Amino acid sequence: MVERVDLSDKFAFDSRSLDSLKQSARNDSPEALKSAASQFEALFLNLVLKTMREAGGNDNPLDNEQSKLFTSLLDQQLTQNLAKRGFGLADSLIRQLSNNAGNQIINADPAGKGKVFNPQGIDAYLNNLKLEPQKVDEVKTSESSIQRIKDFESKLGAHAAQASSETGIPAKFLLSQAALESGWGKKEIKSIDGSASHNVFGIKASKNWTGKTVNAVTTEYVNGVAQQKVEKFKAYDSYADAFKDYAQLITKNPRYQQVIANSADASSFAQGLQKAGYATDPQYANKLTSIIKHSFSA
Image (tube, rainbow, N blue to C red; front, side, top):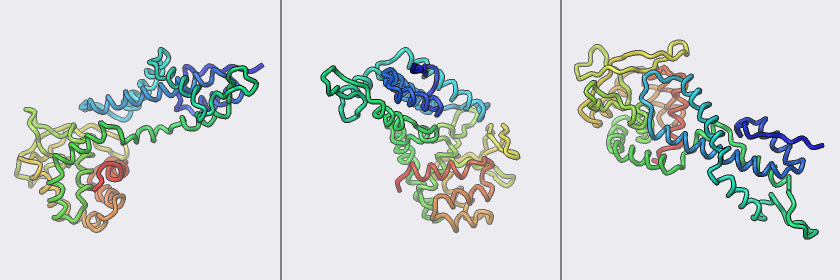
């Protein structure tokens, strides 16, 4: 007797669930096609929800890695429940895969008795369906992401080019760091009255800073543990002033000499900033390198 495995409550990110689904397919289970299509619909809905959250931004100063993990798990469960009800995508996939001989999910019966199920076809389909979570997080070709990059470059590109000529650091590196520090402009530090500080590099105000300042909640890592603190940051009259001050900081402060020396390579530049103590986030270099490599073309 063939064991029927109900995977409706399991998410496709779980490799064990996928293995069970593939085994069900090998046992000539027509229900496997429906389950696979439902899993794909859940994945699609999860991406939509993730994109909506990113587009809306999150200015909660109490947000941390634990809350982000909880939100991610909640979204997975929510989209799985939504997929159970169905939005029509799974049904469309089933119709397409059933009628498209190239997919070889359901083949014509040589004996002329209709169609027969092809478990090898769905096994290959499931291998394509299996997306690693980090790959899902790196979807960078959506229209919203492309437009976000274009808008950010249009707004700050000229200032980055000027700072690049002063420091020798590629403009795309500077734009990427500004994007990381300011959350693509959505988390730019603001004054108490809501006015912009133009501080897109998260530069704190030292004791000898005579310009304007603004207090803001920031996340600092102490011995690898994230902590919320209120710090004093510089405030500028314009983005041009912010990029100019950043250029002076990088070129005049001795601790960033190696950053300038290794600014031809994205990873070396990012690692140099982290080693020099620009930020306390242990993943700062990895995040910056990812933005540089996947966002700005020049």
